[in-house]
Amino acid sequence: MVVNYPSGRQVKVTMHDDGVHADMLANDGVFGGVVEALEPGQYTARAVFEGTTATGARFVRSTEHSFHVVNPYISLTGTLYLHRTLRLPRPPAHLRRLLVRSTRSRRC
Image (cartoon, rainbow, N blue to C red; front, side, top):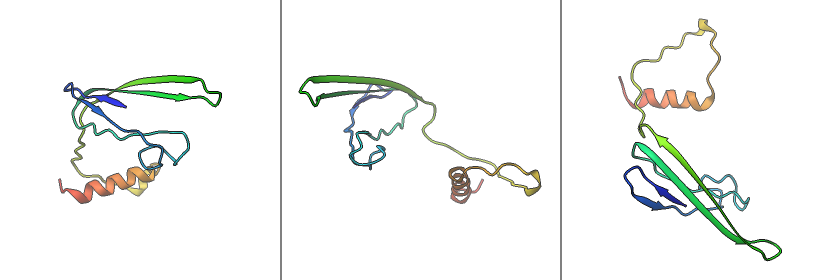
């Protein structure tokens, strides 16, 4: 996969089917690669796949996706107050972990 960064830099990213590189499970036919999007702006990722079918026919497939990064860093400021009498739905576990980590990492 080739990733074009907002600065014009191109980075070649190796894709894997090992269950480690954002690709679900090893050897499941789903490939993944990790891109560090540390610059704000427009990115384009293009992947080209070549192979041979079970009958011996060659094939080429490609895909291209673009995405925009507004700010690669998040800054949480202020104080979070939870009041049990509000009866708000409980946030999902991943958001609760984010809130706990952010309040422990920096005092505002």
